[in-house]
Structure formats: C-alpha cells, structure tokens
Figure (cartoon, helix red, strand yellow):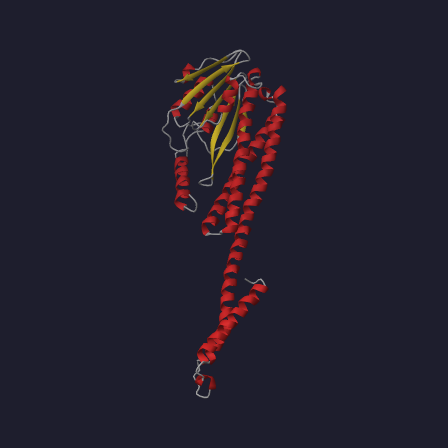
Length: 365
C-alpha cells in the first residue's frame, strides 16, 4: 500500500465515476456511491424495557413490528446500504425523508445532524486501524432516533456494536431502564470510545517507527512516515464534525435527546475535545518523525564519513613514505641498504600503531 500510486488513484477514480451517475438527478434520488458489495442485507430487531427483552432476525422490512406508542424501546439494526430498492422500502415503511435516504446511500458523508418532527437523523463514522498497512478505514453509521426507537443503518456487518447488544441482552448498566435517547447516546459513546483505541494504536505505531528510524533510517521507513502522517490528518475528518454534532445536540431543543440524558451527551462532548487535543499531539509527533529521520540519516552519514576519514588519515603518512621511495633517484643512499625494505615497512607499521593508539586516546574510534 505504501507509496503505491495506483492503489491511491483507482479508488478515487471509481468514486468519481460513481458520483457521475448522480449528475442531473432530482434531489432524493437513491444512488449508491460506496464500494461494490455483494453480501446480503441483514436486519435485527431488538425490543426491550426493564423487564422485557426480545430479539428477532428479520428477512423482510415489512416484518418489523410497529413500535409507535409501544411500551418498549425498539432497536432496529440494519447492515447493508448497497441495495437501492431495500433502502427505498425502509424509507417507506418508517416514513423517512427521501433526502435522508440519499445521505444513507452515500457513505462518504461527514458527520452531521438533521432534526425532523418525528425523528432526528445523525451521521457518524466508525474508525478502525490496520497496523500492517498503516491505514485508517472508516464506516458510515446512520442513526434515526425516534421517540421509542432507534434505527441504526451501516454499510457492512462489522460487530462494532456487539458490546451494546450484550449489555441490553444481559441487562447490564442502566440502558434497559432508559428510553431511545439513551440508546442513541450509548451507540455514539461506543463509537467515540473506539476512537481512543485507534489513536492509541497509531501512537504505538509512531513509537515503533521512531525506534526503527533511529536505528536504521531507510527509504522504506520514510514511506511509512509519510503514510502515517497522512492517516493522522485523516482522523480529524470524522472527529471534529462529530464534536459540532454533539454541540448542536446540547444547544438545540431536541426533546428526544434532552432531559436526564443531557449530562451523558456533555460527557461525550468532553471526550471529543480530549480526542482533538490528542490528535494535535499525534500530528506534532508524526511531523517530528521527519526531523528524527533527517537527524538519524545525517548521523549515519557522519559515522560513515568518520570511518572514511580515519582510514584516509591512516594512509596519508604511509602514502607519503611510499611516494618518497618510489621516486627511484640514484642519489638516494637508502636504496642501496640491504635491509632498507624491511626497515621502511617496520617504520610504516609503527606509524600505523602509533596513530591507532592516538585515535583511541582521543576517543575518535
């Protein structure tokens, strides 16, 4: 993945090609612009209150029980947004605005909130990090929050929300005693908590790359640094808009998301502020890897130059002696001495040993 421009260009090209199909179409036209998928759509319906729990796997959207004016909270979990006819049926069955359905089928949306009379629509991004490819991937999460129900629609079937499912099923915490607004909070809070996990993984990766950079600054390490820096910048794309969404939840009068749960959304807002500060730290650390790489590379080059200089210094006096006696002038009396050759070699070895001891004393070696 690192440094492969073909892999970078093809997804963008495919995305623009899919967007081109929407040009000139009326608002609310359903066109899926995400990656091609073939897995079937899955629907899970969970009804619960403090003393009741029922889970049902549904094959047709028409099988969803009517939850209006019910005494239970209903969580409808839909995995898969690539089938246009299915999303249209979901919109008709639950009376969802066509513009919302259009946003659901566009998994490149930024986090946002839209308030309607009967429900509130929130877009979020779930993040995951692959340490082998140094890449961050995201998945769009669509929440439609009604008075007594939450419809969660996501692009694929990752088990991101299994902890919430287990808490409801095993009656852990207060979620079974609360209404739909608290369920929406629990889902959002889980996504935000997962952001901390991703940031921690990237922070560990930065430390690993920093150690590799110091010990062996190679071009491959530079590619890792470049890619990691880009991934850190991409993290800001879903997190900062989500803070604006939660800020709007806190500032606007949204009855479904107000009341006793207001304090919980304030806690999510604080977590997002903490995440943004952590992102700034990560960005500084990732940028600092370039300085570390340059310093390590210069240090490595200086060590090489030092060795070459020492070797050259050793041979300077020896080359001088060999140059003098290589002139072969007949007036040079040393040329007639029988033991001249071994004497000169001995002197050259003695000079070399003396220089080596001198360099050791000076700690140049």
